[in-house]
Amino acid sequence: MKIEEIKITKAELDRIYEDFADTDRGLGITPRESERIELAVRESGDIAAYASGLLEYELFYISDMWVSEGKRRQHIGSELLSSLEERARSAGCKQAYLWTAGEQNLSFYIANGYEVFVCFEDCFGVKGHHKYGLKKIL
Picture (tube, rainbow, N blue to C red):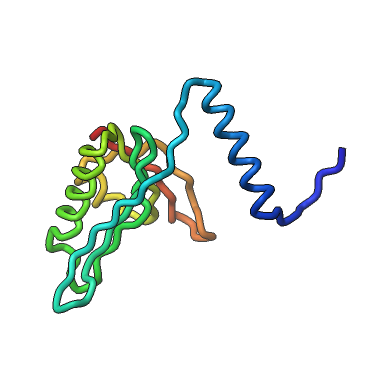
């Protein structure tokens, strides 16, 4: 057997994903497409804050959370996050999870009820800059 680095075609990737789906069906898991939820706060037509995530069965992956610099520390992020979580809860999700880096972001999520489940230390080539995985029961 020879292992090589390649770029596969879309058709090859589709075949691999179909095999994953067949394996899931064999385990009684119904294949489901991820659904994205996107929420934003606009001021004077401009986006001041944005959050999005993917519904994945009973899990909700928060992929993006952003508040413009001038709007931070005004509870906009917490309200946006809470709205995102409520949409996920309404869709049947029982847990939310996300990845973040930096102590300021970590403090924000902990203040909003998240707990760290993993920490990768000294990421991005910067000593003391960690990447965190966080989760919350919805």
